Amino acid sequence: MLRSLLLISFTVIFSSAGFSQRTCGTVENYNQMILKNPVLREQIENEVKAITDRNELTKRRTQVVVAIPVVVHVIHNNEAIGTGTNISDAQIQSQIQAMTKDFRLLNPDSLQPSHPFWQFTCDVLIEFCLARQTPGGQPSTGIERLNRGLDWSMSDCNNILKPQTIWDPHRYLNLWTVDWEPGSPDLLGYAQFPGGPDETDGVVIGYTNFGTTGNVLAPYNLGRTVTHEVGHWFGLQHIWGDAFCGDDLISDTPPQVSDNVNCPTFPRRPFNSCGSNANGEMYMNYMDYVDDRCMVMFTYEQAVRMNSTLYGSRASLITSNGCSTPNPGISENEIFGQKISLYPNPTSGHIKIRVAENSSESLNIILTDVLGRSIKHFTIDNAQEFMDLDLSEFSSGFYFLQFHQKGLSTIKKINLIK
Image (cartoon, rainbow, N blue to C red; front, side, top):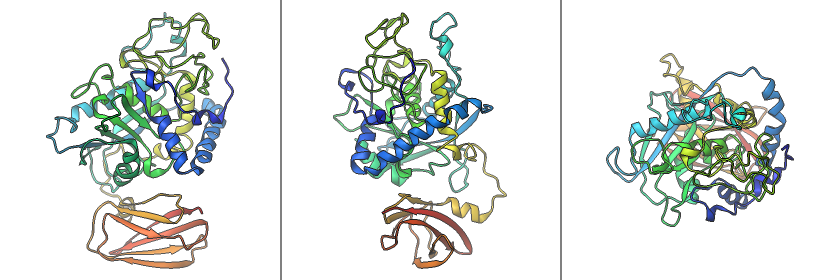
C-alpha cells in the first residue's frame, strides 16, 4: 500500500505499549522533547520531509557499504567488569556483530526464498565498528565505563547522563547501557530521531537487552532491541505507525492494525481491516514489537529511508575516522580541536564547553561574528572539563568561538537562536 507522507506521524503518542511485552520509549521521548522545546517539532518534521525528498536520489546513488563508528558508554554501579550492569567486552562486541549482521542481511535467521515476504528483504549496506579512537585522537576500544549508579529514567538520561558523557555525535553513534529505574520494567530502550539536539543524540538500552551473550535476558537476548532503536535513529517509525492502521511512511510494508508481540504464526491477520492481503502483517520486521527470535528483516524502502538519513543529516558519519586507528601524524591543532565540544548548539544563549581533559593552562576564547570581527574575549584559568558561557546579550545569528591554549588553536561555529 502506498501511504501518504504525513509529517504528523512522529507526533502520534504511542497508545498500545501497555498491552505489549516489548516497550520502546522513542515516541515518548520525542513527545517529552517537544513539550520541553516546541521548536524541536518543526526541526524534526523538517528533517522528516528532507529524508522523504532525498529518497529518490538515494535510490539512484551508487551504493557502497558504510561503517559507522560506535562508542558504548557502560553505566555501572562499581561492579567488577562482567558483573551486573558493568557488562563484559564480549557482551558489547556481540551486540556490534549482531547489529551489523541484521543491517547487512547476514543474520542466519533471515527469511528463506520460499517465504512470501522474502522478496522485500534488503541489505541496508550499513555496518558498525567499535570506535578505535577518541574524539581527541587517542587510541580507544570504543567502550567507556562510567560509575554513575543505578535507576536511570529517560529524563535523567537526557538531562544529565547524555550531555555529560556524549562523544561528538557528528562522528560517532553513541550507545548507552543503563539499569532502568523501578517502575519502568518493560522499557527496553529508546532513540532520538534525526533532527534532535546534538547533546542528547544516540540510543539508550537496558543492559540486559544489549548483545547476545553475558548478562542478557530472553526473549530480548539476540541484540534486536539495538537494531530496532538504531532503525529509529536512522529515521524509521514503528511499522504500525503508532496508531490503528497507522502510516509508517514506508511503501513496501503492509498495512497493520497495531503492534505484534511474542512470536506470531504466519500469516498474521490476513485481510485485516486496514487492507492487508492474504500474507497479512509483516510482524517479523525489526520495527515491530515481537520477540528477538522472530524479528529478522528490514525492507528495501526502509533501507532507502535509512540511507537517505545517512547521506543527509548524518552524512558526517560517512567521513568520520572513528573506525580507523589514530594517525600519529595528525596535527596538534586538530587534536586540540577534537577535545573541545559545545552544547547545546544551536543555543538560545547559554552554552556549555566540554574539554576532554582538564588543564592547568588558561584557555583564551575569542567570540567573532561572521565577518571575523572580534566582539568579546574570555579567559578561563585552570580550564575544567565543563565550563559555562553566557552569550545571551547577543542577537540571533552565526558566531565563531576561537580557542587558544598553550600555542594551540581551533575554531567552533555557534548558531544563536532567540
